[in-house]
Length: 333
Ligand code: COA
Image 1 (tube, helix red, strand yellow):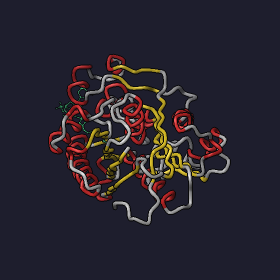
Image 2 (tube, rainbow, N blue to C red):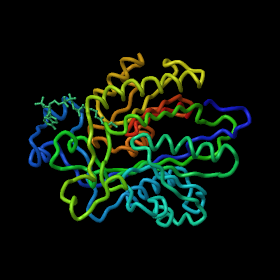
Image 3 (cartoon, rainbow, N blue to C red):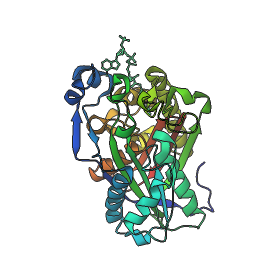
Image 4 (cartoon, rainbow, N blue to C red):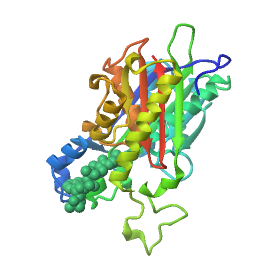
């Protein structure tokens, strides 16, 4: 919903991101599965992705992204009262990855927890943190999208392993003062009737990993690519239009659209349907592939740091993922 007049307005005071050093190119994938650079680039736009080291966990990626966001916001861990990590690839099933991050940052006063909404998680976290600040309960919040998807990919399945990568992005949310930017409107949606078209079937209570099934690669992503593609285009287009209208804007007012970074053809289809100029749409999936909850967060940070939008500009973030889940938000920077 759009902001009611009694709510405290909330802005993004800093962004940060971090990707692991190791680059896996399409040529590297050609050595693992029956694929080639031409197929991957023409179907997805992805040229390379980052792969975390064995001893580099989701919380490590998240912590580094958070440190970069804190630096930009000129805050330290002790200033943070709320940490939400959006991830589907936690360090451990419990405790939450956010607890490790809290400790790493020395954010001893912060309440910290994870949310699981796949590629939509960062915008779900943004909505939640915004609400917790706007009702006066918290001052400075840290939201992070972080994933080590390389641990949950079947490296023998060419249908999926070429698509994903590791990384993290973060943002600091805080009260907006008179004349500053603000999060204007948000839309979120879920369709639980379609859990099966994009999921990790094993490792949970429905199919625990046992000594009998450990070799079956059940704790790996599976996907009906074409179906996901269609749904993603429709949901992201509708959510974008909704938040733009709710904020009292038109597409002409938008300086930059930052979509979920899954597939260039999905992004192009949305751009066509939204009737927005392609130059206004930020894309970095060629470098990182799909990093799920981290994707839009890394893209926001890179767009911000590269000057793709400036203070006072209106931007739209829009995402889609397993669940199915989707979300969009319109922000005056
Ligand atoms: N390299 C070479 N060939 C491949 C391949 C690969 N990495 N992956 C699949 N193929 C083959 C298939 O086996 C199939 O071969 P066949 O016709 O002999 O059976 C052929 O390519 C076409 O497969 P299809 O699935 O129809 O391709 P597509 O045009 O739908 O593209 C995706 C596949 C996955 C790129 C596309 O569906 C997609 O991007 N979907 C959305 C994925 C996504 O974004 N998921 C995350 C959302 S959060």
